[in-house]
Image 1 (cartoon, rainbow, N blue to C red):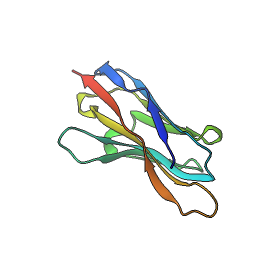
Image 2 (cartoon, rainbow, N blue to C red):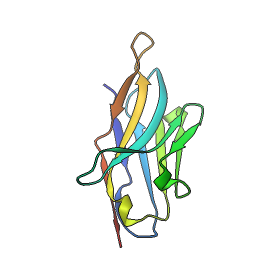
Image 3 (tube, rainbow, N blue to C red):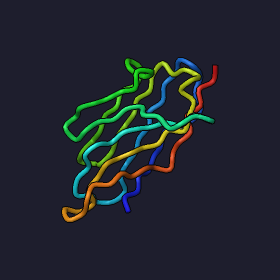
Length: 121
């Protein structure tokens, strides 16, 4: 099983910044997409941002211009720089990857345990 270890969540005032990190914890044959989703209390999980192994990115409209996703392929790590945070960004943020553990295995989706981001007004 691929484990995704997240860090960097916490409490910040509106207008502040946080940086989330997520590292895959074991050797993996290949990782296609890495990204972040979030789930606010009482709401469905939603996409925040994704990045492919080639560096193509996708963002939710609500975070465009404020959040930046990046990755270090050599370290199997993805980052999310969050600036100009708003109270509506408050949620549990989940790391995601679509990966192939070995050449003879199919691609699968893997999720981190989640990290809380709270933005106070």
